[in-house]
Length: 350
Ligand SMILES: [Zn+2]
Ligand SMILES: [Zn+2]
Image 1 (cartoon, rainbow, N blue to C red):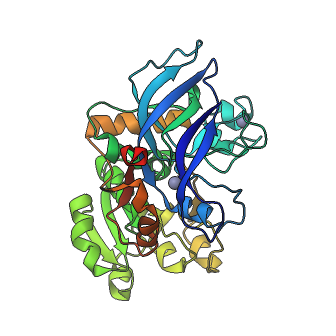
Image 2: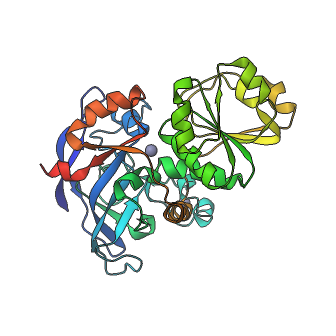
Image 3: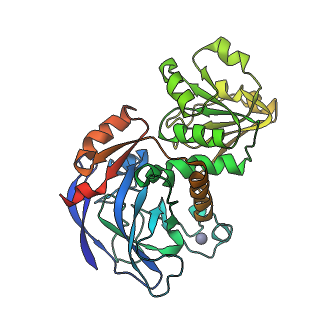
């Protein structure tokens, strides 16, 4: 066991502050990573503040981790010291159940081990601690390779915001020429726009704020639809092949259901809470589907990263020091970030 520096919180009402945590020694199949960058996801805030009522304290958030390999176990085959690697929302699973066999570790029947706030299999009585830290030790099967040509800091959000939007676009087979709506322009939405554009879709940003139009177009949207404008919405009725809905809170669904073509699907990736009731007729007429999606498996995450390398796709970020984290959380809540904060972990050594 090794004591390292981290940033975390001891209670829902407490700000994040420096703390020491313990990491396991490098096991046979483990990789030890010196963390250089970590993205700030809204889930970090929900967990730090116990907003999902399942937080175990102390909480050390962070599941958009980028770093350099500084140690490998004797049985490691895929990585060596010096490699640039990433770790996302998952650090382990049972490896044997039907979802794990289908490369869907996020749905492991025994319960996947999430990067923070999960039961730690290796250190008795401790939960997992995330990437707001100088180092992490992870099973090599849950470590991702980061393409050399993309900026490591801007690659960090690909590990959660990236895969969360990539996986549904791939699963529902979005292809060239499809009309794809992306609802909500935040950390998730801005990645959805970039990916849908790179896949050759006709991308429509659907937002409540007209002031976001210019940004959406520079990110790759071909058109912007203001959801508050009923006439504009009506003009797009029954025309979308797919809608990626990233709104993070419960909201009216009927206006978006109306936009879908026959047999088309709207996927929810943001709202992990009660949705407002919607009219059954809206999906019955048109055989429409509402679905959900949670991050993606490790294999699919690597495919997404390789695609990002080929197409030069990264997140738009604002780099911060670890000491600025509490202010950054307040700004995420106000949607005052374009589009993801990433912590320069060098600052944690100060
Ligand atoms: Zn996340
Ligand atoms: Zn499993």
